[in-house]
Amino acid sequence: MELLELYLSPRDAQRFQAIATRLPVGVGDAATDCVLPFWVGEQDWRKTIIKVLESSQGFRAEHYPEPGEQAWLEQEGLLLPDRQSFHAAYLERIGQSLYRSLFPPDSEIKQAFLNSLRVAEQHNTDLHLRLKFAAKSVERSRMADYPWELIHDGQRFLQHRQVIVSRYIAYEALSPALLPQKQLLVLLIAPRAEDATQKLTKLSDAEQQAIRLGLSKAAAEGLVVLESLPKATLKALSTDLAQRAETQMPQVLHFDGHGLFGKRCVNPQCGQIHTGIKVERCRSCSQLLPEPTGFLLFEDEQGGPDYVSAASLAAFLPKGMALVVLSACQSGMAVAGESIFNGTAQQLIDARVPAVVAMQYGVRVDAASQFAEQFYRILGQKKPLVIALNEGRKWMGVDGNQWYRPVLYLRWLDNQGGQMFAETAIAEPRQLKLSRFQRLEMKRLQVELEDLEQDYESVKAQLRVELDASTQNRLERQVEQIGQAMDTKEQQLFRLKQQDE
Ligand SMILES: [Zn+2]
Image 1 (cartoon, helix red, strand yellow):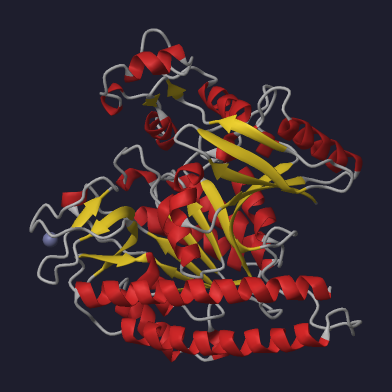
Image 2 (cartoon, rainbow, N blue to C red):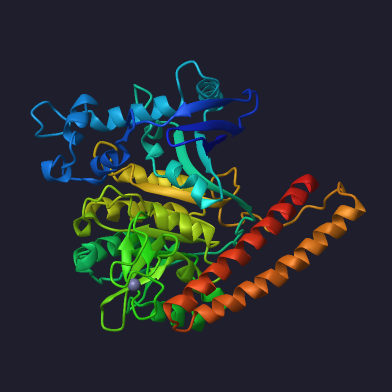
């Protein structure tokens, strides 16, 4: 596989720079100023596009009530003039707008992309297009909201032929390098809580069964083992993980349920959840709200809603868990113009989960089942994540409007596209390339990293008991800070190790 990495760096509300940070051998450097798509003057129609992509059933006028919204869809050629249904080629047209935005005509970056494709063709292999986003969440938030997986060059969707897209959040963390395992152990958790105040309806058991069916088909080959939690509470999950021996730890957590991006009131007596990022004060008690974050909807002991932030979930996950998969089926979703799991996926990556596969939008039941079957089958064969994702995507059906929903986020640099299992465990003897001073520096960094890891574990342990909202918030911030310090050290170590190769 050839690799082209594009770093997407925002400039202002409408502009960003695309910089080629990794290129196939023989392809020249490139950087280009780009303009985001779906803007008309000062009006940003991004949310409208997301609503279009969310829907599985086609156009419904009640989803587009904003003044000028339907007129814009018609102007863009996405909606037919009778305003009853989408144009047959609406996905292609959205994909072309994204393509023109990322690869402006006659730009360096477009040339670099075309040259990279040519190199991949000559080598009879695929091109891995890796989109790199800043580790700082504020800087990347808007850029990662766009459905880049849909890019279409005027003749075809790139992902349907020869190109595989992944997203890398630039922590330069160390690879999870799991030891070779005979079988991949997947732990399924499927909360069925509902919350009418957030318009989250109960997901049906048919949906859960479909995922289970897909997973068990993949398990039939003997390379994947599926286990599921009888009770979908955070407590049940943490108890289950705490009781396992190291060899029995799942490598994958598959979460099938609702996600939400928003703010939770820190007042211990309140704790109200607010969707979105704009609201500043709690609607119930007027307390100032914290920064928004991603939540997953677990059940509480009575089966009611329990919002668990990405950071507190990550605190329960054992070291060997390399991948979290987030999926939700469409029927339980309200069309909201917001990607359900994109934000949560990025927050899990921020909280040191090495890889996340997330459905950007709700998925049809049959497509979710097909995806699970093929994705886990390929992953069970120890193939890299991008390959598994691409296979899963193909089986969702290339003609429908489901295939662009899964997105892969990685936290570490991996030119193979997320190889989680070490293929060979034999280390080759190496020549000395670092100075004696640099070797001492490496040792020092390793010791400091271990100390930080201990701090990290101890704060995580404190998070495991039930806490009031403000203590939980404080500890989550602490986890975040220690995590950032660890990242800095890991990056320094990573650079030294790279020099050593
Ligand atoms: Zn409140």
